[in-house]
Amino acid sequence: MRVLIEALKNIFKRPFTRRYPKEKLRPYKRFRGRINYYPKRCIGCRLCEKYCPVGAIKFYKKGKIDFDLGICITCGMCQDVCPTNPKSIEISREFEFSDKDKKKLRNLIK
Image (cartoon, one colour):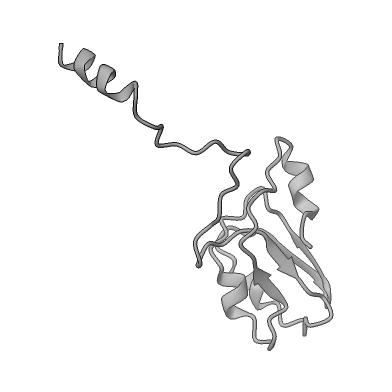
């Protein structure tokens, strides 16, 4: 009986969820999303590869890094350890880059 009463109460209330993608979400200020890599700023120190906890970064040579976003957990360690100023790796607030194929996520770095 209690379930029926709750159901009747909630019929006339607005839903708690948003109508995504019609209503665009705005991530909060410290949200970590897409990784942006600037190869001209890179000095080739390889700290990003060393400190990545899941091994999502493979360093080939100065200015050539492969990011695997299929396994990246967006922890921000690569950005934090980067010694260049301005940073060669920055994490933006963009979050709409999902795909069903993990191979396509490999080279989505801007």
